[in-house]
Image (cartoon, rainbow, N blue to C red):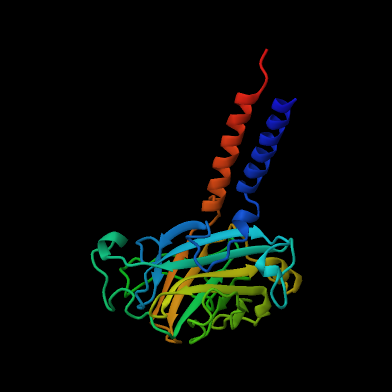
Amino acid sequence: MARVTVLRFFRTVATVALALAAGGPARAELLTGDPSADGWTAGPNSLQNGFYIRGAGNFSYDMFRTAYTVTAGSPLAAMVNPWAAGDRVLAMGGVMVPTSASAAGWPAIIGATVNSNLAANVRIVSKFTSSGSAWSPSGTAPGAGTGAGSHMNGDGGMGAVLVSTNAGQVTTAGAGLLTVPVNANQWSGTVGSNGPAISTQSSRVIYGVDASGRLRSWEMLLNTTLLAGANTGLPTPTAAGRWNQALQSDTSSTLITDGLLPAGETVVPTPAAGLLLSLGAAALGLGRRLRPRG
């Protein structure tokens, strides 16, 4: 009897651990402002050949993306104007990293030294699209990009959403806190315009800073359930879309770096999920050894 009870216990542990590791709250609800620590899917570097789009800002950051459903225990559900359990979320972010021309696949990077434009006035600009995105990478090295990445000229396709912070919104005091970005627009087809404003409550941002108070990492989230419920008549961005993550120095249109995030999102276990997988496997193994024979 004792052996059977122990066996049932380990089967239960294995089932719960493997279920959580497969994509439960341990994965979805990590919101630290650092997508590399939260288990998001890693994408290319913003200056990497084939993914750098445009801009002379020469900001180097590794890009990340994810998509999930809000759960009842989410910090997103605990904010003022909370998001509801069951809401669908698309999210992209970045982590500032050094790079060189050779590492990024270019003969040379021209203009500003990499990340020298990273100052207190930096803006986070995230652009979400459906699968109709026409964004394209640059054919020339960073500092003189020729790719298509403008939101207001429609390269993101109808319904593309731009969400951004304002200059000065990234502060040491605000690091690690979920806040509401200042700007949100959805492109409606008028070339030269960012399109009509949408509620900024459909988006959230959280970021981290380094010891000098400069942006170190960030996560930008878009609630597509709220967006679809607004009945704009425009397509809603999807996880299948190619997205565009940008950083911009103040409001300068030239000191910007747009990076192309490939379409799709693959579930990558977080460190917590990896631990759960190990626990589940160990419990299954021990359960097999305890199973009665004969």
